Length: 147
Image 1 (cartoon, rainbow, N blue to C red):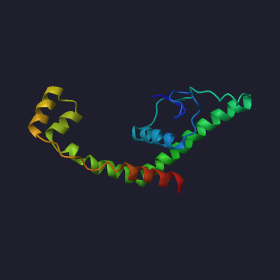
Image 2: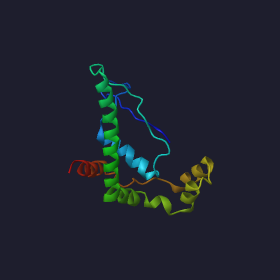
Image 3: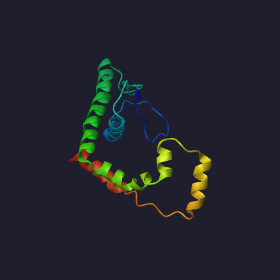
Image 4: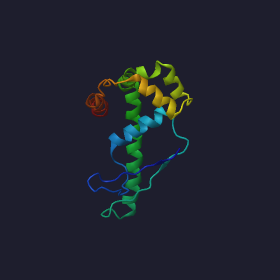
């Protein structure tokens, strides 16, 4: 697996291929990389320095910025995993997804859409899921990033 490592300007609405500097996004990316078992490839900085940064030194600083951003993201992602609160929340939130035969069939890719549709019709009216507590989870990430 290889990661195309650049970022855009959220206010422009298109990909500006900037070198990554957003530690928050890099941390969440590296969290997923660690949870998936790591990388078999590397990072492709498909990016360029900004127009006012035109010297060779600026180019080197751009690459250093990108590498440092992902290195810090990796350190903070490991801290999130070691902290355990995010993983514990996910485990509890989705615990009911692993209790039935249909759950096992879904996980093992042993079902099809028709069987799932029939199962859903028999369930009747759906209940609201438990809260996703997004703000709590973001607070946990902020606490680990900025303490």
